[in-house]
Length: 240
DNA sequence: CTCCGGGAAA
DNA sequence: TTTCCTGGAG
Image 1 (cartoon, rainbow, N blue to C red):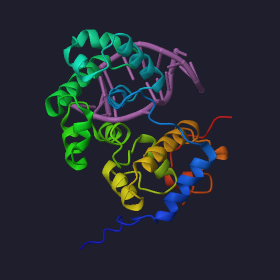
Image 2 (image 1 turned 60 degrees about the vertical axis):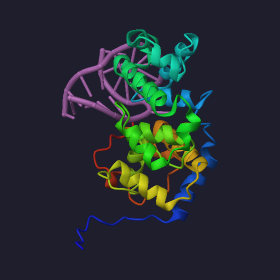
Image 3 (image 1 turned 60 degrees about the horizontal axis):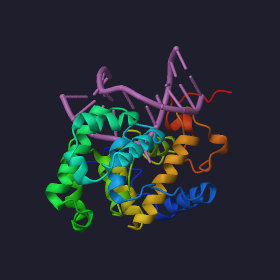
């Protein structure tokens, strides 16, 4: 076996990740993810929130509810342009309209629109099927698996990768599955744990580990293996 | 890497 | 006014 030298920083100790988790939970508190009235609403939200502020997703979901089209059947029937108009506040409305139509068609075709039947499918198989859908990449697929179906899949996102890179917990070049599989291997396979952990990381990314990091008040201050400058050199300084 | 995009914070 | 938002496809 080759030992390229870029290998290591491999398996973090379980205790380390659990201490990070409890630190965040204690400092920030439960985030109550995913806010929705149904698993299907979670799936729709997972599409709508792609690179989009949640505030704007709420407007779109409200419009879907008012138009009474927040179901696989109704989304399957609605005209794509009409759907695009309804979800306009969430941005990328033409793309997302097509993506929602594809998701609805998938649910109807594969599971007769029943999320119970969908949930009964093997997680790995289901993940592959979701990834084949247009507009469903790794993060969206895993968000659906975790937050809509309560499968123990750790959701990795841009915040996660930024936080991990800055603290020296993972290489900046680490791939999506590399981080996901490492966390899943190091943590108990509990959906409730992954649920809260990811939500807390998003909070840290939004409030502290921003493009210009504000480490002074951050709950993760003290958990870094390296300095921010060392881990990610071109980080902008926070303005005063 | 660029495009898709409205909405609101900075 | 500019920047950024719980990404994914070409």
